[in-house]
Length: 305
Image 1 (cartoon, rainbow, N blue to C red):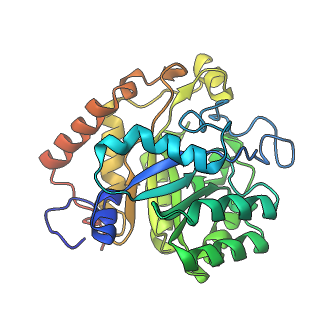
Image 2 (image 1 turned 90 degrees about the horizontal axis):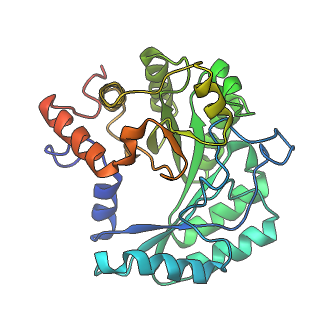
């Protein structure tokens, strides 16, 4: 963190320093499925996976250029700069034939208004030919690969039906970074039966493998999911806002200052949200987080020895 007034190494500041302007991510959908949904690895996806939860901000009915144009229309009034990140967000964006991926990724990266690509996927969906494709794209414009880790603990991974071990994640990170590709890990706070110490161990692991970025999410219970059934049966409780902020503080103060924090909480479709309901007012949540961080003088990495 170059500015001592910055409490953490935010993605927004990272982009401003790199591109000297505000940069928006445009959610895209190439209609890729997921091996944890189609029976290849599992059925039904992770227990928190909601039908449509990863596609509510993208429209699979249009081709990539039309999707980008439509997404730009929603944010164009907020920026004077024509700089955007094409975010291949929905489900597993490398779980498709290589020629199909090549066509769509190159369409996006060849546009003058797209300054970078962000590809969301699973670590077990990064075959050598896909990594080679991403490597070639990265020579044209910066590429970031986002991987849904959620937790390092195998017991929790089994419970949430992640369907891959930690070793697969670590190997994928190693391969991508060897090719000069930045990797962002998604972590969920409030997973059933996980303690603050469990979360802290996950953060320390990310430090140890030199992850480039992290997205911190609150566990949302959405209707029509296995997690919702567990919630109805009283198998776990969701976090109250103070518990979540305390976990955020623990994560940030133990996270290497070199790691870019892309997100402090996640979004959930309000029509499907069951709990915690306080998370629906995202603006209020972010303001509360900011106030508590100032009150407690939260600083990224301050607890590291």
